[in-house]
Amino acid sequence: MSVVTKKIKLNTKGDTDIIDITGQVASAAAKAGVKSGIVAVFVSGSTGGLTTVEYEPGLVQDLKKAFEDIAPKSGTYQHDLRWHDGNGHAHVRASLLGPSISVPFIDKKLQLGTWQQIIFIDFDNRPRSRELIVQIVGD
Image (cartoon, rainbow, N blue to C red; front, side, top):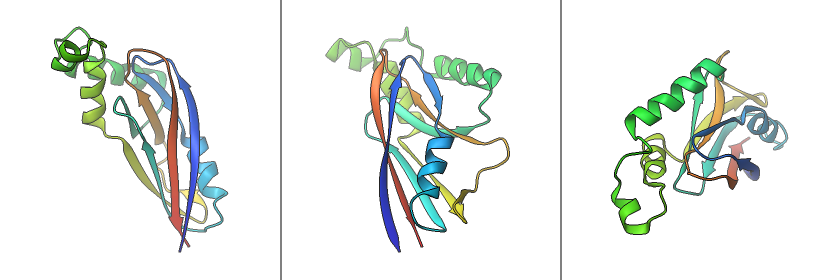
């Protein structure tokens, strides 16, 4: 059993910026020196999240709209009233999505569906430099 840790660095636009990271995660898993196992991706930060989707322009817009409907930017948030940083909506959205995802891989290949990609979403209200932690566990 091996554990390999890699990092993915991203510069985001913020404001529900949705980034396809499938290629970077697949590359990390393929180069980890293990044949099969699990790859876990984690964002250390409370205004970003990870999930899978069919990454195409229509669904990207649908997802942005859904998050705006659930936790509108213009809403009143106690976080904003306390800290005055205007990103209370980002914290709520990220909390609903979650900071991590795990995907199995077999023969160095991620076991994603045909139309399934791994995405990172930056909900913050400003551009950010993000670092995702990728851990590959396997044999």
